[in-house]
Length: 466
Ligand code: NAP
Image (cartoon, rainbow, N blue to C red; front, side, top):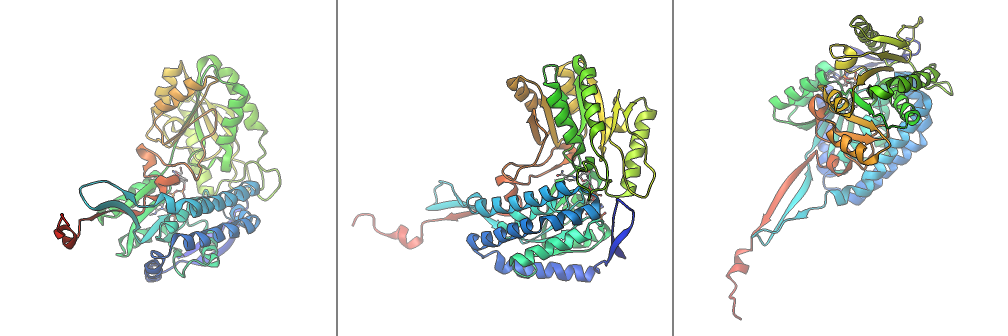
């Protein structure tokens, strides 16, 4: 079967690629394992030099990479450039910090010497989504490779060009041949790769159903998984918030990547006293964002990545309206071949509607009324997900207290949830488990090895009085 790049702005196929056979995928795993046998012994300084080169290549090629993302999945150019730069940052961050983060930790026991060492596991399989085609991969690959692992990537089927570009950039940086391989395979062939004896662990970023399936397959063969899954991030707006600043941040977070971010703001939980005023400011700003060709200057919102995803999102909007939500903006599928969907605002959203219960992966905002702070926290936590959350208030201490009440892996006060190479990132509940980034991320795919050295027999036998 062929894997195709289809431009979501036009519906036209850009290029098709032959899918790898299961034998070719297995050979790529074996090649990655062979590379790992020397890579694992390569000193940190040499690994870091290559990782810095990988960063330099990303910076050099950022315009070309942004264009590739725009063509394959519709990301507006300026956002693609920022994504390539962030990938360079994560490479530089781990080049600078991996050695210290993985330095052996001495533990005082009755041994002559005892310590914990962090050793690479081998080949790690990464199953990745299309929404940040570079960032999702680099935030896995930079720490995994710096820790001395090798990587094989099964990228989303609609971004094969990005997948191959990443493999090529690691090779160009000088990583050992095969240390990072792209497997052009469909999801039905993932299980065989998980079961390959030389694959030691699996990380998946994607939807919750995909995570459940991959984790079950990996569990059956006792392989560790890290899961970065979906979210329905609540943004709580309290009555003492700066409403203009809150509305600005909320709109930016809802529309980042045309609404297709796991940590995009999805549910806006607004305390009744300021609900009308916030809603007006929010809708005005949603309306002002420019929808259009991702390759054009000034575009804020491009097409969604695929037509089927756009149609699924529209179904969620329709079902929410059928169950009593009120349409304040958007909600109509535009004519034409592109997978466009307009910024949309739903009010009067309540439990039992897709806009309340499920993840809306596109530019659709759900406004939910709360009677007070306590009610807002209850609604925010009334979800199967737990990825990010934010709270808006002019009282920083109150914001921090509410942030600690929110069930999420990352909470922000007066700001949009964002990932940062220096801080751990991940979810709880159906948003997954394990962490990427920071010092926690680099320790996910290592053998936490205890080394216990007893006094040598000869030394012990040495006479005490001499
Ligand atoms: P998806 O459909 O789950 O696909 C993600 C990846 O998993 C793709 O490579 C896909 O391959 C593969 N896949 C899907 N089903 C599979 C299965 N049963 N077995 C093995 N592999 C499978 O997700 P998406 O539509 O690309 O991405 C959107 C989702 O990702 C959203 O839910 C979003 O919230 C989540 N996400 C989470 C994070 C995070 O950090 N928590 C970050 C970004 C995105 P094919 O393309 O070949 O189907």
